[in-house]
Amino acid sequence: MHTHGDPDPDMSSITDRKVDDIRKQYALDIYKTIKVANYQLTQFRGLQPFTCHRVSNLYINEIGGDCGPVTVKFLEMHTHGDPDPDMSSITDRKVDDIRKQYALDIYKTIVMPAYYAPPRA
View (cartoon, one colour):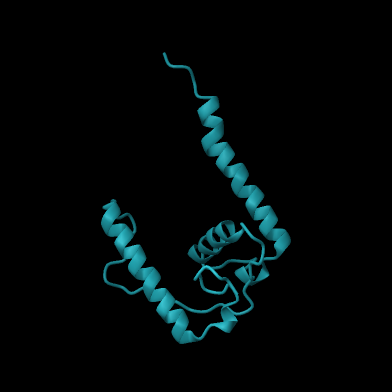
């Protein structure tokens, strides 16, 4: 169990009502962020509500520092309809690979262009 006020990553120990309370708080936080950021909406959903469902047999992240990459991978997979291999097939070894791939992606898209930018004319 986390001691920082965050929900326990083992969602099986949390009731559906508590999950709904957490979801509502996240939705409110996202709304506030959108309102403050005042960014251009590119995928506006109109008045359609977001949906939420619990995934059974989901990978439980117990390794410190991996929650960010795991969360991003879950969001990425969910966005694409949870294709094979699905979220429930993630393992500690796959999380290591995911973290390495994200590091390489960041290096390729941010670091390399910064050091190897074409000279100005």
